[in-house]
Image (tube, rainbow, N blue to C red; front, side, top):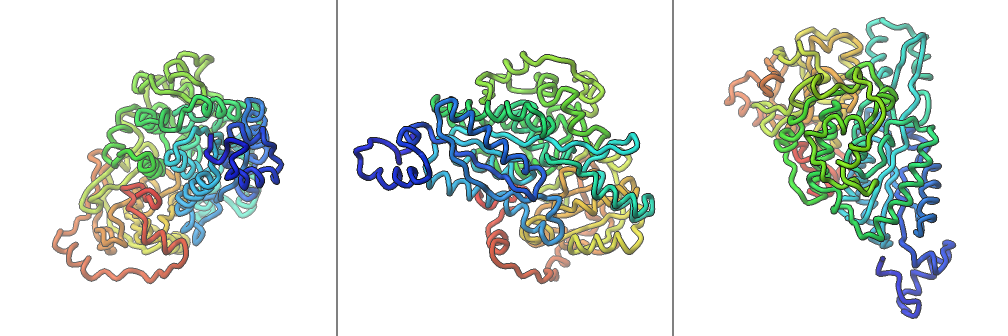
Length: 553
């Protein structure tokens, strides 16, 4: 129990108890385990809009099991809405969310925590906080958005991004584009694709800190109420059992989660986030170690936009539980699934029901061997870069072509909208790294436009920024060192030949090393004066190979 609460005769408790009383809490309420409900509800993010209602049901569970629920909120930006200038602030908020939670929890001395979250930077920010604070903690996500259906076809959010490219080349008309804009994102819930939101949400399930099916079921399911009450009840048990977060969210659990992500073709952003989470855990997860772990499993499932299956399809096929059961031979089954109070072995042994093996392949019939990512190195990326290999057409595993160079996302967007993109080329977007952006913006729309324009089988795109978890195609991100730190990508000029080989995990700038060194001496950075949080971020953030960590370096 918190040191703020104790003997009623201790006069030093008076201020705390008096102020809690003014919020409506009785003495006997204060003497119970105080459970902080960390809510990222907002009505300007569909993935978080349902969390106001779910928080009420978490409260019910906490009260029912002898705890006292108290709720506070954190920011919850939507990556999809925060394009262009707004994207500078997105990755920054991951660490700001973690810092704000730490500050509130440490100030008020809560006993346990329930994290309500859904989307791309909020789940990782809350994970970082849970790992650092090390109180009993559980998570719950809002559930998935209803897919959109039109003339027998099923569409989800990532299809809307690709529609921009289709509209650009005349494959769809203005009326269709307008209909899709207003209809395709058809309800609350997380976008029904395997971007960063659902990669990280289902990661929570795979490590036992959230209920199974919580990320894949539709947001409107009545089972969400049951889950919320169950999480509220279970967190009180964990407090009473004195089971702090690090006692069950261990290195083994983290590695199980990485293997799960790799087996399901997850988001490259997970690499950034889990390296940062490992830092908060005070454990080591360098890029080469992440690669070693993720490459140890076969890929048995892929979802939108890397296949035709959406998250609702995944849920109906058996969901995370079916994947864990399928890849159990690669997992540490002794790990503690905290929500269930059992080991992973007991959880997978209890999994029943049919599995759709067209969607979740059997281990004897995988989609690919050696994991879903390619972690690549070379003279253009001495500290590494990442690609979602399972989102790349095999004919583009090896690509060699001339560079077309841009200094920002806006530059490449304008180019793609107004000028021809030559097949065979390599689009190079620099000064979008953690410091250079600042904020390591995602090249989500340019990457989707490339697909919509039908160029993802002939044109590659590389950047020291990052991509959406829902990006597909030959998109190389996280190139390190970044251009702002005088990494070799800063030396690339129009016409230079770049070679990308996912078979050998290499990326090469075919320019003599002496010439690269001479160019780097003459590099002039673009003028990007920033203030406030962006300035602080630029001054404090680590490179992408270290998770772009700002708070826990």
